[in-house]
Length: 308
View 1: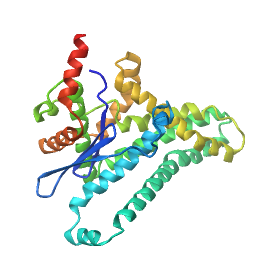
View 2: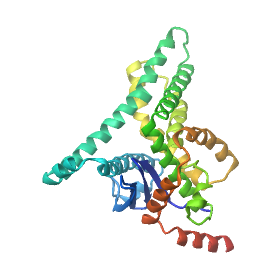
View 3: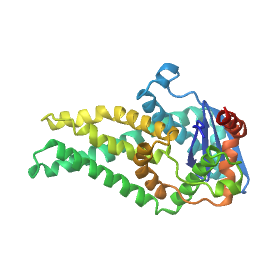
View 4: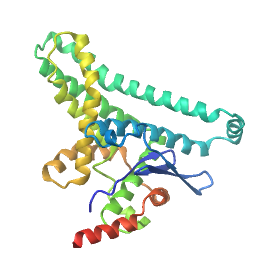
């Protein structure tokens, strides 16, 4: 099957699915009913040329994913706030504006925090090895290994948290729904249950590939000034994100042996960031898909394409 064009994220007791300029969030409410709502989202940049430009589209897609992730998380969390908090929000005329401003600040803070922990911190830790190692290339490799260790360690630690385990179960439901569709099966609980919870277009794979690609890029930085080396690393982050996105995009469309081999580490790491969902979670994933994606039409089109 060809790339379906649908992708998603797990949220609090729910799943967000995006298809083109539409996304839907399905949430299992405390009363066990499923609430589904769809929204339009054109992206932070409206220029279609930029949105389709290689490398640049990866950076924009990453930022859009953060924005949509925050919006979806806030939407799903709203079902678990008490009535008094909801009433206070409804009484505030400018609550929507404040919410958007708060979300923007949260996204910016999240990016800064991630860059600090996964990019800046490994660089300064690697400087401790300067006393014993003169080669900047070897130091860049050590820095990359430290970065990978911090990232994998972070994933391992959060995967042990009970609340995160449920999010990872919904993450598994999201992947299994997409795999079910892309493998030509009818989107039912039974078919989704037996589909794989690993997917090559996963954000986990993207982030891991960012860590790996950074090793290659940073190895070419040979300047003597420590401050300049750090600034060049920070300047290269958008490029690294763009290159990583292009690979993940290719991986989602290709069954090439080399591409599949390079995708393996990300798929292995997804064993930590996804868990097997229960049937109730799968139902939420299906509801989210069907709100934005006509999977039956897609599969019919694929059948015609395969015959021709």
